[in-house]
Each structure stands twice: as C-alpha cells, then as structure tokens.
Length: 308
Image (cartoon, rainbow, N blue to C red; front, side, top):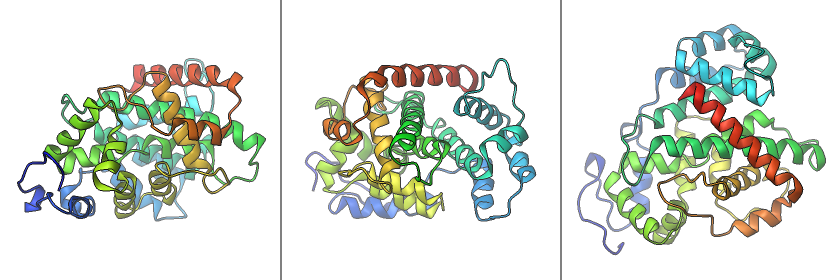
C-alpha cells in the first residue's frame, strides 16, 4: 500500500489502494473511464483502418474541425520548412506534400492533444503547459531524427513527421491518469513536486512499473498507430540505439532538451534522472544542440500564436 494514499473508490467503484497498478490498468483499459476523443479524432482512427483512404477523405475530416485544420496547416508548414506567411497551404496540398500516412498520424496526434486542453487547470496539471512541453519534445525529436537518420540510419522506415506525432503523445499516460483518478494523481504529483522528481519517475518508484506501459495499453485500445504505443513504452526504458529504438531515443532526447530549455510538462521543475544516459546514447553533435533548441523554441512559439 502506498504511504499516505487515501482509501476510497475510484471511477466506477474501483478502489485503487492495495494492488494499485493493476487497478489503474483496469481504468486505463476501460473505455467509459477514459477521456472522450473529439469527433475528428474518432473519424481519423476509423480512417486508419482503410489502407485505400484518399486525400479527399482526409481533407473532409480535417476541414470539418476548423481548429484542427489550422493546427494541421501550421504544423505542416513548419515540418516542411515552408514559411507560412509566404505560402498559405491548403489542406489538400499539405496532405500531398506530407503524404497520407504522415498527415493521418500528425492530424490524429493533434486531435488527441486538443482533447487534453479540455482538462481543468489545477496546481498539479496545467493543460497548456503540458501541451507546450509536448510540442517542444515533438519538434525537437523530429529535428534530431532528421539529422541522425541522414548520418547514421539512412534505411530507417519512419518519417520525421511520424516521429513528431509520436513525440506529441509520448507521455499520454499523465493526462489519462489525471482523468481516470485525479485524487491519486494529485497524491503522486505532490510527492513528485516536493522531491523535484518527474511524475513518471515517481510513478515507477511507487508502483515498480512504468506509466508508459499503461499508456501503451490505452493506445492499443484506441487503435492508435503501433509506433505511438512503442514510443510510450520504450521512452522510459534503457535505450540502446539501433534502428528499432531510434524513434523512442529521439523522443527521449527531445524530452531532455525540453527540460534543459525550461519546457517542463507539469508545474514544477523536474528533470529526467537518467538524462546523462540518453545524451551518451544519442551522441548528438554538441555544436548543433543550441540550434536545435532554438529552432524548437521558435516552432513552439509560432504554433502557439496560431493554434492556441
């Protein structure tokens, strides 16, 4: 039993005291307990099942949600390095330039991310801060992946756009935990804040397993692209750099850069306890790091002005 945890039922009468990780797993796999995805996200998930989806189908879904359409266009212009002020993309042209698979992944991650913004701000969870952190991680991971793929893994099968999408959702377990059992979330967050630890590190210490494993199960339940769940699991593991682990390694390095730049996911400063490990694993050119951080900061700022 966790010291200081309060007795009492969670959603649907589930008591989380005792074998808490297993009971949380029940909630992470129960559709009725999870955040309700918006209509655009649900339609995009259905479209993922169709290998013959057309540009027109994808365009209709994205265009049906004006806020999502704006975010997709802004994100596409930055991922493609097209000055948005000088070239106003249409949804169709963005899809053609990114490709259908990449656009589906990016749009889906943006739609799910928007769902997080509906959460109420509390001393332990600020939706906009959380999303800004994820954007920094996502842009950084995509930019680092682009360089590493070119230099060391030319045959890697993922695109930078897919790495961006996976980075945007890499820590989905945090808002899901907040949603399915806020009282227990607040208890863990208080312990983490008092010790300047990350929420995920505190979760591992309390339960002996990773929050990413539970998040990956939710990703599977929602039938998200397999890459998303793999990154959620692997980002909290010891990573040896190879082609299979490259997406998670880039996302974890993106998290390191986010923390170094002051883009923390929750309302206190807490850095990855094993940051040195990922820095050594990625072995990214130190001379390029300031430029990568500056680029990500500009991208997040630009995105926020348009899509907030």
